[in-house]
Image 1 (cartoon, rainbow, N blue to C red):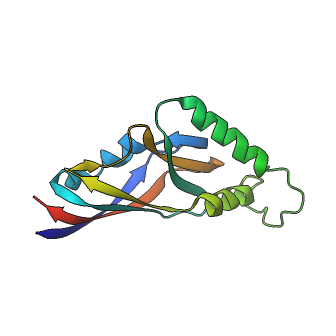
Image 2: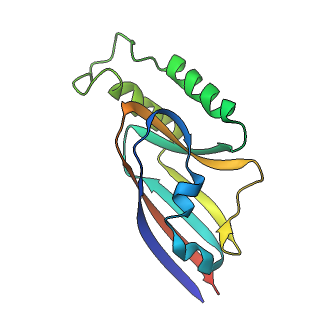
Length: 143
């Protein structure tokens, strides 16, 4: 039988940087274990953070990624006009646009079919972005 499930996840507030959130996401989707095969769609409902998939083992990858994107898009860029919400806001919007707000991940035997070294990242662009919402939609064959 084919089924669809949807839940809105609430991520704990995180400081600016790149954060591994795989377990935080999976722990809020108990329906996942019912899906034999399918797809999990994650949609981040924010414009100053982003989602991506990368290395889940070495935290230096996350630190280096955060350092690189902060240097690529510095708060100090003098031509930004959108500054009413602080110097970190416009750079956060650009980081969100570069990495995107959505992911599609295959599901197999009740679990995410990520590669051995893959994990879900939240790229938090604000110094203190607050909690973040993700709409998680599962669809596929259930047992």
